Length: 421
Image (cartoon, rainbow, N blue to C red):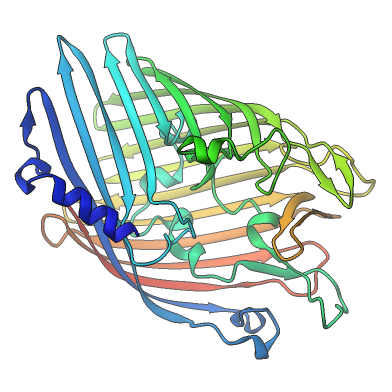
């Protein structure tokens, strides 16, 4: 389906237009990337099977050759100093996207810009996503601690019971137990694309501010999707009336470049039902502070993120830990051709609520101690020619689920060639 739509769009416009032809004040631009990658994952033996510990469920490939392809269309206009336009970023592979998304588009956005600032609307990243400063800002190769490694490891992390019923082996999704990405709660690869409107101020003496509003973190795209979601959770454990605030400061001093950001998210958490009992969740209240310093080709960056008790059940149980926090740090070196980075990420998270896909029901995931995730990644890249970049990356990960029998850990090795146009 994706291939058909992409081919149709390409057929509607001459290639000269897609390269940047002017249409009476409107300019259309085509860009994109083709990333062909070979990878190898080394993880604990129990997690090499489709169902952890069960050899009869089939052993998964530990190595593979994969693709990640995107096409982006941008249109820009100018009317008496008023700039306007939009962007459509499409998935263009022969299967689901690497994050499992079935959507045709990765993001869509329209904008209007003047001396008073910039207004954006659509299914796209908000202010806390676009103005974020952290170790992710300087990573090379596939993205280091926020890179492709997480799509290679087993989606389950731990065994919940010491002596599980053979007919019901309970393993948990690592995304349900840990803060698996170095972002605020509404800022991961999928939730950040909820339908929203954003405003960004002009830069003033190095300062810039942004604000975003999203009615529902689960509603994106057309009315066909938006009308499906309610003020209670169906499956996604979402939030409503989400406000994102962002403040960024950027300045240069001689050969030094300094950039810092302060981010905040607020919203109402949807309720959920467990075994017929309706339960509440803590409101979305989370913040992040990050900084980056660059000297010539060297960069150092990092951030600290506090989720507070965002999304945790209001039906607290004595002896359980609640809340989440995380931090990341990285260093990078870059020349005209060569780039290298090393990044580290660590998070801790208490008891959570998650959607059990097999049982099709919500479950409470207790935690007498904090669940901890640690990731260390090294990446290198080389710009061989214009738009042609070979790269390599090695990442170590460790899952530490409190009170469980089996946790996963290991390494992911990736190498590939990325073509950007």
